[in-house]
Image (cartoon, rainbow, N blue to C red; front, side, top):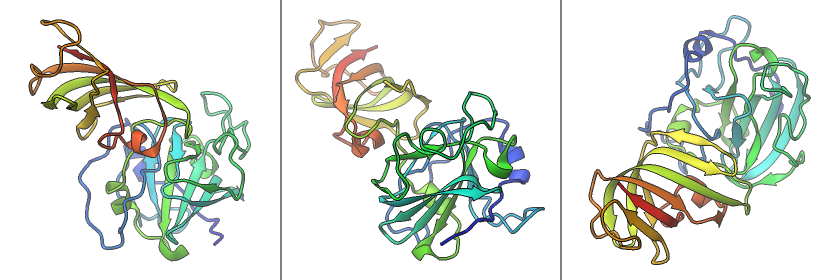
Length: 294
């Protein structure tokens, strides 16, 4: 499948570029979505259902534009084989992901800048447009980094974003919006198998002797330094017996018996090796090392 003609120029980007915000969490059901994909961009984003919108200089919009900061991490929506595409003036730096399910995903307008500004000095190569060390033709796992968000091609100077397309059975494009709304977002990204740690600030939703459910207001990840605010849904954190629990009143090391709903809390997770389950914040995937109760 060789699709070269995709353009991002249009009213949608001009409306969205005013600011980045978390996209709505509620998903619209669609019979075409059988297994939720991994959301293709990590961190704060903004997008809307702009599939099919007319373009003044080409065919109707074949994807959804996901606005994100320059060099935000783009990850594989599902496991599959990737292909670099570097010869389209409109798409700029582009990547195909041939999913193991048979669905093909297009990642368009990837980064071509070498500095924090829009310098257009970079090439469509690993480390600039594509993930460091990624080889053309490689098989990637769901949630693995495949590239960096940018504004290459005819998106140059408009807004940094990922133009994301979905082609079931490697056929014609369908509206990605339902896929994105039902996708599993990653809380953070770390190279598979590398060490990471999180600092979670928020309030307690529910508490048990061995776990906390937290409505997170701020998440900070190390070593990437990624910071997220106001997560859409609570996270469940396991609190093993080895975790230190501190509270304003009561001895250090006391357990969670006095914790209550709405109580401020700060949690540092145990250093661990990155997995997709941990990056999604699946129940049981994150373990507390230190809990500070407000």
